[in-house]
Length: 443
Image 1 (cartoon, rainbow, N blue to C red):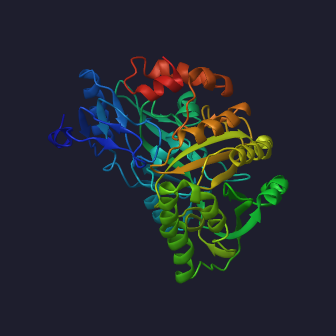
Image 2: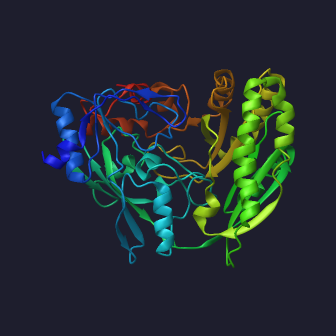
Image 3: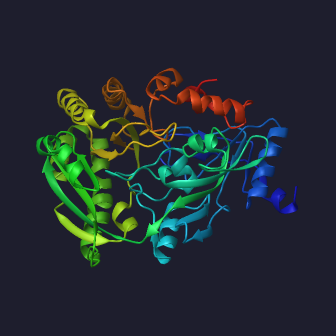
């Protein structure tokens, strides 16, 4: 092992915590490899020492998917773009690169991902490995835009995987949960930079659910937020535009995205946590605070928003045709319960894809996400919501709170056995295992 590699492997004396503060871990040591060779050496050394290995990105998963008591790999030195291929229209990027840096770099090159989630703090490998997604009628998750990936396996080999090379690994490892190896690089499909026009406006719950199918069909990207304890929603429609660019004004953007969506929202949630009885009244005011607006900008400035208020989240993927029924059941449950919910419910969609453990694998999907402010009791609400979602064959987001186990997941994922068989082949000794993966994958 090189001296440089040795200096980046250190005995850990700190506790790792995720973004929401819901998970902690005390690894034996931490490593910060700066190349795929150093990463492979780190994996081999851990195996020799009998230690398990996990990689953490920015800790945006609410589950313990990245927690380990062995070697914790921090990928902050594995960053940057390796190459841009304008003939194939792809970009190859190191696995630890934050999405916000990738988006900005691509924009400077006149390029963009086709679709993305609503935050961009995560690393590219962390986001794809857990199935991070946005909303789209025709365009799917970030992982579905992967054209090739580089994977360090349990024996220290470096596999390059695509539809042409190691296709069975590629079919699973695009959303690999960290169970098949450590992703060291990803190649994404990109396209010339384009403009999106966003139209945000309030709409009643009854109207948005009655017109959900039409709103989905008529817009490239449709999503909405329902405010519990009210009949009010905020909708967002993003569609491609010929321009010209017309971003929000600096003052109006600050009012909407910082003051209302972060600063004031932080205050009202703090009040709601201290005085739960005030939440319904606060919800009625909050649901009317955001007004209609339309703006046009490059994709990542439209798709993503700052999220500074910390929370805990559960999200389920259900068949799109079941979305309205599930939402109405969720609203009825909240209305008749003593629950006090200060965070809106988020609803998005995705087309079917072909990734083994994608939440949209093999079926057109609607996503329903429930949230609670950090520090507020959430289990009763999440348990009741989970009961509704699982009755519709729901698949939980891999990086968000849920209670499902391998027996349940094997029933809702037709290719579950394909994934676990590949895991048995690539990591028979569970070098990349942890308690979370034991629960959701078995063995």
